[in-house]
Image (tube, rainbow, N blue to C red):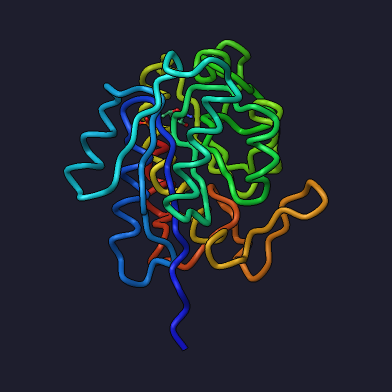
Length: 232
Ligand code: GRF
């Protein structure tokens, strides 16, 4: 029996490196999801050009073109419907969502955030982690709820904070791990192994070795050893 791939739309505001990581993961014929469209609030987002170059449908919805946040989100929602999206991935999408939009896509919309949630919601996470004296930092993929960076966590990866780190060096190392974590989490969602139930993320049938990334996954999906080698 062949299972239909889940249709994923990605919302971005800028660089789009996580979007590209998802696109590259989806290039594997065995990946259970395909990227069907990339949407931005910023017509100049670099990620839009990258998506177009890969033959992906792109659309830009500048906030200034709409009279309200609700109208803006309604236009994006209409595009998601047009794309027949099953899953919405926020990847550096820099706008707060209206509660109605968040509720409509509840359980189907996920975000990647550069911290070990619930620590360091919001911006400037790398600097705040260093300044707080943390020895580890990381990233989280979570279901999106109306509150910012607040939804149930599906997957997390840990990155050591080195004595020599500044916000930029730490951000660069976390980003490398984000590019592995996001495709992993979307794979779980697409396979129905990650679900949102009663405001909790429920995982079934996933490896739990969780050394530096949790949940773990099959060795060919995530190279745990190369993550470990990031610690000098
Ligand atoms: C990433 O660090 C992501 O975690 C955060 O915004 C950044 C987006 O980077 N939400 P990119 O556009 O995916 O390169």
